[in-house]
Length: 244
Image (cartoon, rainbow, N blue to C red):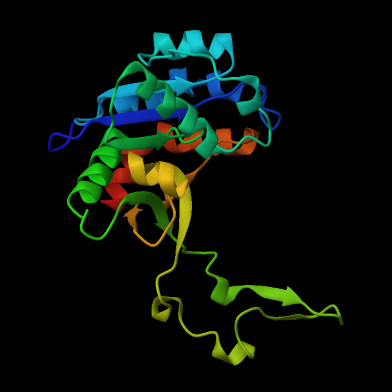
């Protein structure tokens, strides 16, 4: 709980990944990939309940071994390539309501984001709860650095490059003079549960940013992502010492 408010963490982990077969239970630095967001939620000071939503029996068993609840198997119609995350959350929240449980906040963590830590979860929840006057949800964002669109180009009809956002190349400016820009990094989302069900989204006019370092934004969707995330995890102390 945080200030008397109960928090439900939901981790969606369907079977049948095509980009990286079996990715949710792949061995990753000492535990299944799915185990890392479970650990982040378990180590949180505030999360009351952790539910993994899956349609796969093997994933369900591994999730339980890692310390999460799997009180249901997700219906097949919510486990397709076109199934939406909000429909999965609605199903999980609806299940808890039918049990008679009430959760003030819903936290979404992704198995494909193993670099999320309990400190990220707790800071996001603290930020959201202390800013309820202006916000109902919070999402992870990271600052755009090397790929700032001010430096992007397009290829014109002649086959030549031209600036994407500028009139000409002389207006490029210095990187340090550019306005900070952020992207949705995809690892962490939290919302007032009632507002989430009403808006059917974490993104709206009352959404706070939880600013996370770019190295935490890697999502494991293919082999290259997996290799990069493993390299970061194995060097995480060095990276933190540099960025702190």
